[in-house]
Length: 155
Image (cartoon, rainbow, N blue to C red):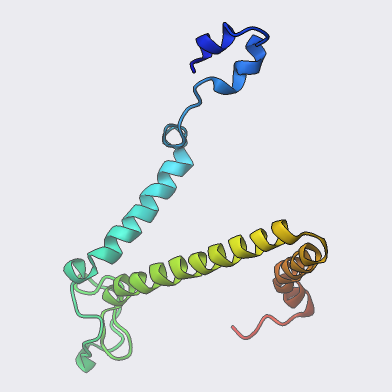
């Protein structure tokens, strides 16, 4: 039923139809946001680099060349070489694959656990909701507590 048809119905006021107005889509709103476009570009660039790592890397990330140990950045090795003579740029590009995989895996686990705990909390309520809420509060406060106690680790 369109907005015009709904207004013609008896007892329906025009202000009742405000929610039926066409809202701009999420993509059109994101396309107008400069920061969203920059963020999307960076993420897509990282995905593209990770997907084409074997094509765009100038050297193998695992081949060792002891003659080239600890070379400074140059045209041949833009980020230099490590203590085994491996090209650091190639290692960073191949490492982006693992970084994406770990990030997606961590987000997936958090999503599944969050939905499961939210469903349990909402369905049962009462003390189950209280326990899950307390556990969530403790989990979210834990990094802050470690920081306040001075347990920052070495480095």
